[in-house]
Length: 230
Image (cartoon, rainbow, N blue to C red; front, top):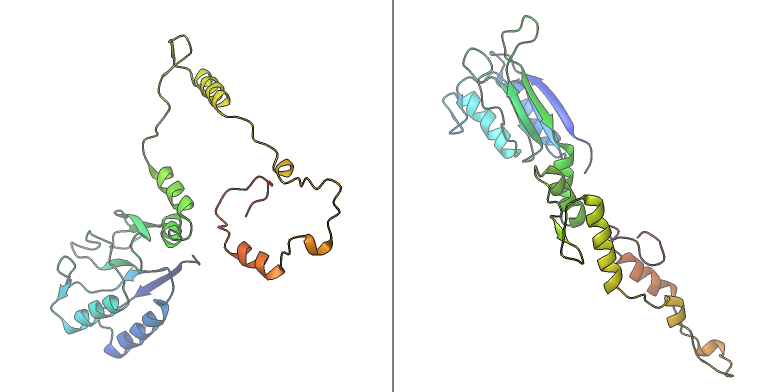
């Protein structure tokens, strides 16, 4: 995912429709960004955000524009004298979080609006099809609980509680059930006796064949026996 585009806008109460239309044209271009957050004082007190409706034509035109450009309004509390004027409008669900309204800055009679742009979450959502391992790693990092290894029984039937002892017990168990595998190089040894292999007897591996198979390697997988990462 690329960078997040952040736009700040102010619309005075008596703004002319020509200026509105110029803004909507700019918004249409900006909304092509993969991640856009538009915020500011839009001065549309007549909009009911619960029903997404408005009495005035100018406010209805504003609602139409943000709907056409797939923007979502995420501020839920009033920001000035019981009216919601200051908005935060991301173009992706989950792009903005932790929205808080409260306090004032300087002599302004508007409440401050605080929010966080959640880069990691958007990146995880964008990469879920190609990088499932990274997605589940992100989900695990957000879990409030962690699953730890519970008590184990050792060879004499006693409970093992300490993490170090549990690790040693598990290590001993896996060592007892796993058998050493033959060296890959040894398994590929050819028993040719006194026969001398000619060049035409060797398997032919073409460059385009190797390139095709390398192109199918999942770059998110772990390294192989050769110690090389994809």
